[in-house]
Structures are given as structure tokens and as C-alpha cells.
Image (cartoon, rainbow, N blue to C red):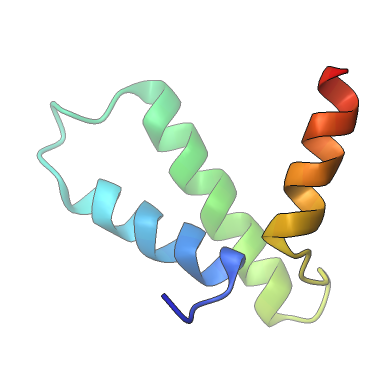
Length: 64
């Protein structure tokens, strides 16, 4: 639980990719690829982390 949001996304993607290929849809595979791309950018210093709190606040603002 101490992982950053990006690290959580990476782990989740890896877990999804380890499932039986029939279970993963094209949408799931696209999300996994996107999570891996973002994590690679983060590791390379090209992406700064954003707290979950900030993300949720922004989503809330957008939905109002």
C-alpha cells in the first residue's frame, strides 16, 4: 500500500497481463499498455507524480 499511484498502476497492469489471455479484452490490454507507458515515462523522469488526492479533486471539479 506504500507504492505510488504510478507503481500501483504498473503492478495492476502486470497482474492483468498475467491472466489467461481470453479474460483480457482489447480495452484491458490498452489500459495495461498505457499504464506501462506512463510508468516508463515516470521512471525516465519525464512525468511527475500526481497525488491521488489531487487527481480525485480534479475529477470532482470536472464532473460538476
